[in-house]
Image (cartoon, rainbow, N blue to C red):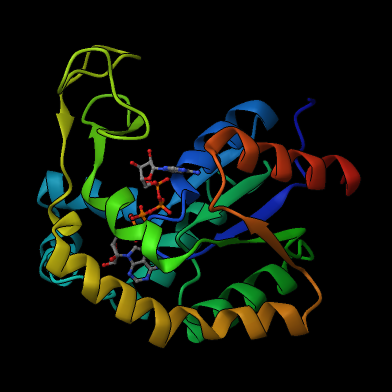
Length: 223
Ligand code: AP5
């Protein structure tokens, strides 16, 4: 598939829906940027930056980081290295004020969203996906002890890096993240449905089947 500078997509869905898994795959196959606000925040936490120090407590508790911090962080990337390329926003926006800020910024640059994918998954599936998730500390690949195990426990198949277990994937933090999703992010479905750009994906199926659904939409709506 050719590089698409005009591909500007949002991946929306609850924690554990598979947004990161699919965004990594699609960004690679389309040759577009992948902006994950969760990954950006975790990188700030790891470096001990002022933003990371402010964000850590909220993240560990399963709460959202303030709109002001997140919007500034995303706008810096969209007006910087991602300005002339296509991109996937993974985990942003996740509040109505974040969506309004994004609409405003994209509207003023004449580059509206081309796709908003909603990853629909039965709630019963999410807890096991999250508590079983392992992430490579070196290349960022996403694994799962049950559904996508590595050949050697704790070692990334892709690069040999050490796997980590996210601190917010403990069952009690997952419960709070799901509550935050229901309260703050779920209303975005109505926002994007009204804008006519919401595409629902059955994300309760296997990763390959989810990828097939996304690719079919991308091909049908080539930009
Ligand atoms: P973030 O990192 O964005 O977490 P999230 O949205 O909760 O999403 P996850 O990364 O948990 O799940 P995912 O949908 O990407 O699933 P994955 O592909 O990894 O945010 C973390 C925190 O940062 C937030 O709680 C908040 O504090 C803060 N934050 C971030 N953005 C913010 C914002 N915009 N505003 C405010 N605060 C913000 O898959 C999960 C597991 O399932 C993996 O093990 C995977 O292998 C497996 N899996 C994937 N697909 C399938 C499948 N189809 N079948 C079976 N298993 C699967």
